[in-house]
Image (cartoon, rainbow, N blue to C red; front, side):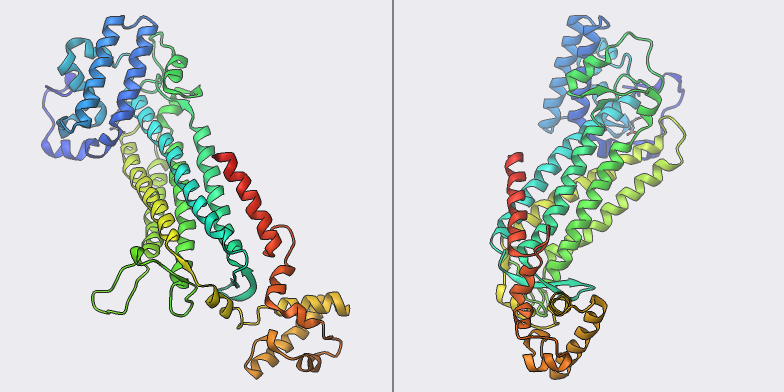
Length: 461
Ligand code: ARG
């Protein structure tokens, strides 16, 4: 059959053009959304009297048959059909005859692709939320076991103050909760029907867009047709949301890589999620977190790529916009597998409490506590207390031990106002528990955060 749009052409397209022009190799991913949209469109056309009952039935049945054919792998995709919309419509006409030619009434491929792609993005918004939830459940199980596991909290990758491992996991949980919020907000913003805008200006046919919206489960109908067929904000949003998730995963992965090194030995990744070296027999490599960290690069690329495609386009549809899909498919696939494998790898991870504790015994983690002690108990202004503590740290360095292990005599040598009770303040656990302000790392504050998380989890279940 000739191309469906070939009326004004006297020569056929070259094979090279077909290959260059076609989106079919990748947009066949949208077959289910395309058929769903067409069924709703035909049903609406019938409801307003543009199609008879028989015509609508034969179109709907024909579309369902094509869906089965595609799912059985029996549909022959032909690149000269250009895209999934044309491929399905052509097959429909082949199968049910001339009545199939009525389906495209009051519709253009411009609003059709805007619909199909939006339906796909909306499904993925929901799917990714589910995967983020699962990851949070796994992290929450880990956190619950480790409110008492002390490790050095860092800034500049230098020992800063003692924190507990649950508190550290909760930091990531908060990032992933914000991610969920972003996908859900994007979903709400995109929850409007684009179909019925036709090419760009609407249609003279007396259609009922509210009906189509209801059939497809949209909460509303888009306001301006010119905007609607030009709009890919929903695609940009999912790309940004995914890039942000992957950035969070990448930071987490960086820590997992560090923590699993000989230098840290804070965690041991399970054999199932580690790999060996082809030459060095001793190696157990953290390939999973490394790949996760690496994959954040490509999803950033996909976001920048679509922003760049869109930024100079005049209204309304331009063929450049066909470049909107592959990056989104790739980012979606990447984030889905990443979320899944991260959760699995974490389930098999061993947390080496002793090594974390040992690491806290170097690096003068309680230096801030000494300064705070001088302020609270010796009535010394903070700047001066900071200075005095600096001397104490330097003495500890000279003696080759941690600040928390200086004797009371040594401390008093620095400042006579220091009393014996200071040792309590320099104790690691006490130091951690002293940070009891809202959102702080003390065990009780961490437990409070876990309680709030539990409430959040129960609400979502
Ligand atoms: N394959 C096109 C795309 O993905 C569909 C829309 C085509 N519209 C058009 N007027 N050529 O963007």
